[in-house]
Amino acid sequence: MTVWLAVQCPDCHSTDVSKHGKSAEGKKRYYCNNSECLRRTFILDNSHPGRKRSVKHQIVEMSLNGSGVRDIARVLHVSPSTVIRELKKKKPHLQVVNQKLLATLPAPAGRSRNSPGCRGRGSRRGD
Image (cartoon, rainbow, N blue to C red):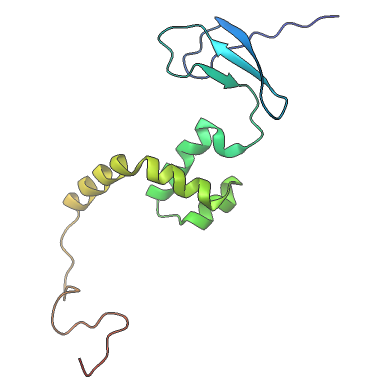
């Protein structure tokens, strides 16, 4: 009995897909024949969760919510280097978001970090 699975491109959702060999791990690779598609080749079931688009999106969302690199890596079951790589790729977009957020926040009350009475970490009294 033969079962036919409809293969869809994960980027453009086109069903105009053809086989494109196998990966080094032996997984089937497919080619999207849609000329407007940004992603031409893809593998349906990646073995590494860090390659999924949803995980990449969650990395950015969690970092915007204040989670650290090691926390994100632990929760999403990816390596910390994957988290750092994705954040570096999104750095220009994250800077714009952070600048907009900082512009909306009120100025902190009390002394600022640069005022003469405030000593930061590692400063000595004799300086």
